[in-house]
Length: 138
Picture 1 (cartoon, rainbow, N blue to C red):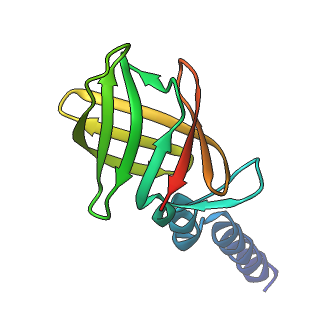
Picture 2: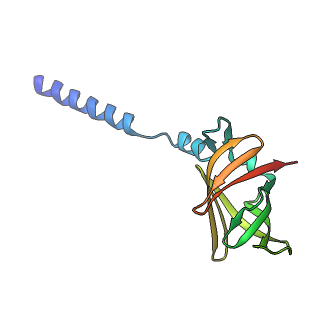
Picture 3: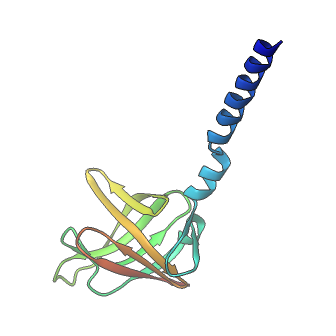
């Protein structure tokens, strides 16, 4: 009888450990779409949709970014010019937002920006070369 109680006790303890160590997939999914930033406001992935004006001197990979228009289909139209040039052009990139990272890709071109903060209407991002501000426009 004592041996059976010990087995039952061990089984209950292991079951409790398994249940407490599991992560909730719904919670993980919610975290992917939301970023609580150090600036105080919460930032959600669907807030990206629309036009964002880039601050002056947002130069990434030799191109100055003027604005980014995020579309709901995972695409973004980025208006840019070669650094120190005045001929602006727009290219369409695919984008992904996960946690605190915003990634753009087109062919072999990949741009990764870490989101450092959000205080409406400004989104604060950085890459390995600098910090930038994107301002939401209507």
